[in-house]
Image (cartoon, rainbow, N blue to C red):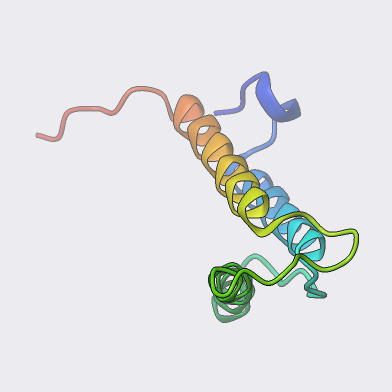
Length: 101
């Protein structure tokens, strides 16, 4: 069911929004990636693996962030917060679970 947060988007629109934001956030980490189609599971996984690798590789020996880019720690927190916020939005809209029986 749709709700007031996010302009009344449905679950698939929220997922597409989060996916697009991930591509934008990846740019802020110095990566240039294209937004995959939401139903292209391999491409979505490759996008997320690229972002994860960039953040993981930044841990040692703490390379500087690319020019005009977010610090890697900030990027990791921002990406995680954004996805979690929308997961909660989807959960809020789902309503109470019915008892199985």
